[in-house]
Structure formats: C-alpha cells, structure tokens
Amino acid sequence: MYRDSHGRGQRRPTFGFWLPQYRTKSGIFDRFVMNQLRRLHRGWPDLIDSIRYEVEEIPTVDTTPWRERTIKYSSVRSPRHRNEPTCIILYRRPLEALARDIDDLQLLIREELVVCLSEITGLRPEEIDPTFHQ
Image (cartoon, rainbow, N blue to C red; front, side, top):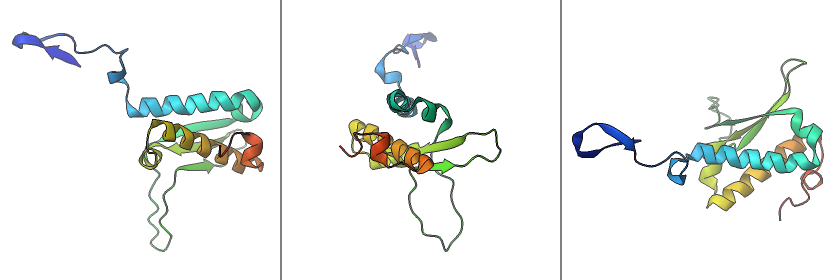
C-alpha cells in the first residue's frame, strides 16, 4: 500500500512489508500449519514426508439434498494413482470461524492434523501426538 502525500502521486509505502499489519489471515494460518507439521515431523519424519498437505478456503459444496449438512474442517484424499501421495486438506475459513482466538486456532489446526494422520495410519491420536487433548 502506497501513500499519495499532498496529491503528488505515490511516494513511499505506508508501512513496511516486514511489519505485522502486512500479514494476512491466510498467511498466518499457513504459518501455523507449517509449525505443526515441523513439530510432528520430529517424531514421525517418514509419515509426515510421505503425505501431501493443502489448505483450502472452504470445502466443496455437496449438492445432494438428502445428505446431512455438516461442517467439514479437514478431509483426507486417497491417492488416485499408485505414485500419488495421500493428501490432507485443511479448510481455513471453518477452522477460523470455530476458533475463539489465535491460540485456539493453533490448537484446532494441531488437532485436525493429528486426527487426519491417525485416520491414515490407523493409530490412535495419542500415539501420534502424546500431548493430544491436553
């Protein structure tokens, strides 16, 4: 964002790109996801490296009228081809809407990742992350 001081045209940025005002919600969310993946990578490097991770704004809408409408916070997509990895998709907007504050958002991201990983591996969430539900 540039400032037009005294009508002489754009002169300088209003604030620097390094300042917190420039951080976007999606950038903060992505950083939280990366922090949790780094933390989980310490205990399960092979598992974390073998999965692809994506962040989408909202889940795709299921237009089937007889299905129950539930809010999805994440999903696991199985590989379509033999060489394709399993993919965990986190939905940013529903998780942000559920979170009360920034700390709660970090906790929700952690829980969703651990639950998805436990669904993929068949392990209990407590086995993947010993601090789960603490």
